[in-house]
Image 1 (tube, rainbow, N blue to C red):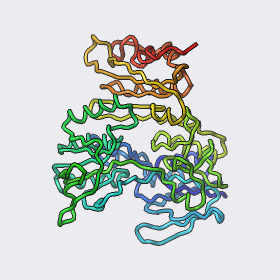
Image 2: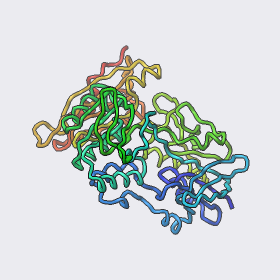
Image 3: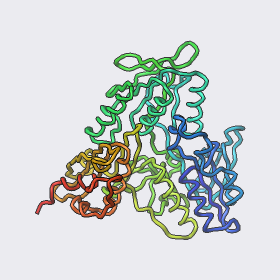
Image 4: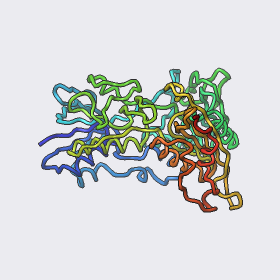
Length: 453
């Protein structure tokens, strides 16, 4: 009997384990999962909405409990167990029980590394103060809720203006806190072009968020009781009863790298389209893995649940004997701040320039519904195209309710290498409650300069 060992029990790891089990029964494949946390298969993306009170309980964010994997699929899940070393020559993993400190050895025929991400923290003093909290895991979300309940904080500082920072700022405002958001960048959501980033900033300010852009965090100040009382910046201190770190993540590839598994320029573990690493018997999937960008062909790593689930499935299919390949990514993502929906896919102008592409941006202003229909909202669609050819390279959307999911139209067009002029001819649905007669995406495509020649 072969033995599949999986490190990491969230999206990618459990997708790989489950898919392999569907194809190979417990009489021919033993599957063990090592998970350092206390939960399997949970929706980390839902944590800000749980903190906000929009999701009623922690349990609602758990797709499948460890016991279900054990009883229904004969997958031996070890919770609270951290993999500490991989020996690729011996094909074994040393793991530590985080409760007792006891160490065990786990042999494998095939190993899937699905170790997720690691936080990128600012190199400043005071991050260990009581009340300075990251938001990556369910335990992190619980810690924020406990702080809100136990301390009744009035003032919060969110550090970082990316997806998690924006979503946590919204959550804390919904909880009634005064919120300041500190970001080193000149705009929130740096994956957007400045003209759309400015709209996100305006929405934050309109909601009362004290937005400190272009402002580095220089430290965290604690009182005599060890609790956070302020954050330090070059412009002075900002009072805080709670500090939430939304400063981003990097691929959690350190464990694999220490074992000699190659790591690529993105920081992710090098994989081929089947999710195999260059080391025999070792596979990688999810946020820790490197893959290919479909527009540039270059190596990238995206921390997205959609990508992690798909990569885990591909790994599991191959481990189960069904050849499959992961075709790459575009980095399609979406979020919101109250009613303002924010989405992007593909390359920004900066990313296109880095890839050596001559790109231009065009922006169309429209409405989410027909102008005469009630509750229409503004929408701005920005397309990044290649100068001279009109080839689509990326797209961004900021607008009211009904705006954001239109990014999927752009993503599909981008996936298939379409030009902006070809997008104009797409047969998209129209009715006044859903769209103007020209969908805003097609309105944006219409104003892209025609290809030369």
